Length: 561
Image 1: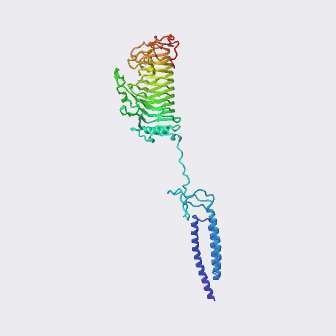
Image 2: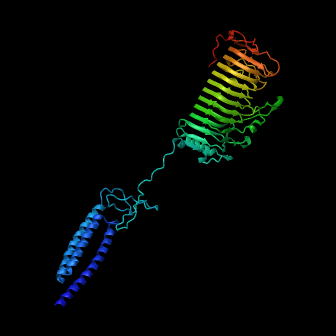
Image 3: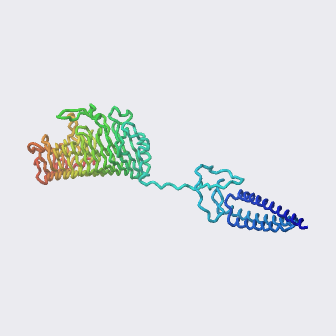
């Protein structure tokens, strides 16, 4: 009997151990099954419940050692029912966590669900590319770091507004080696800059850009700036000039408003080969005659534009006029330098015509023709603190060419210097023209070795073949105050040659003191049909200026102006 009980106990123990091993394998398989459905680490709640179930089963196994075989089987059946119920409950709890309604962002097949209310920081996303919208995966997927590609990357900080408005011509293909034609790059850069408010079209320093004759047209957005810090130049001479390009102008700025031309660079005209063309004679050394330009381009022309500013720029060696303003309203020129040889023909420094409201200040001009020339249709022109060297001085005119009408008024020249020049302060008109020059003020101008310091010439002619004509441009209300310095004794310092039909009227002179630069005093100013008043004694004395007002002009208006 005892032996039978021992055998029964041994059998029960073996069965219990086998069952224990079976359950261990079963639990391992069960956990793998759970991890396939939930590719995350189980929560603490789930582990506690599972430990309690295992403890309960082990207790049952211990009880089995003392139970009969049939009773053991019935007990195991009961345990299986309890275990199935518990695992079903855990499965449902974890499933509700997996489908949490707050998870609304789209997920790819590599994303993992969040099961902890306080998750740890997500690892960085995989650098390898993934499909934008992969097909849904019906089967389980292993745990992996979440794909955060749907989250936009942080944008770089915005560029400075001033940087956004700078258009460097190199960005449009300009080479700047001095020989490559960069015209197309400049045109493309202009097109984009012109369409941007407060844009700066940059010609950078340390480069030499060559472009052909070009019209830069507006209108552009306000406050447009062309900044030349490098060197900008045309082709070298007429032989290199494209046949299809105009030979009357190089750079034209057309229909612009609120534009600025500035920079620390140089606009180089390459004018020497133009000056040497055998078309227009001009003065050479020691009274000789040298060839001059035929069709020669003005370097810079502003046409039908307004509210312009040109400052802090150097312009040199123009084939003809350096800077020309035509049909403009509102021009401010400050601190510019213009430089060409003394014998360069027709290289006017600054020329204005049909232009109003002009200010020319604090500039230095060395050239071979008029330092500043004021053409027909100009009014309210103010010139101050300008230095003119080896030039033809500051001129109003020429006016009335080809029997045309010319109207000029309200011109002021103050606090300026004219040095080593053929002319000083000049008004020049052609015979046969009409119109008037009026309200002209020359004040505080210093002369240094200047020929023809003060001159009004109503018989202006480039050759000796001009015919005498009765019509003329009327000159009136011209004031000369504090004009001092030295003159070249080859010509009289004061010369008034007025029309027989329309005399010069209301000329006022005060504090005029002009002494010879070398040699003896020349005291014979020339006057012809000139009327006015001397407010102070002059040096040299002026005895030829007539008092009063000519009878022939009592009923004459300003001849259409």
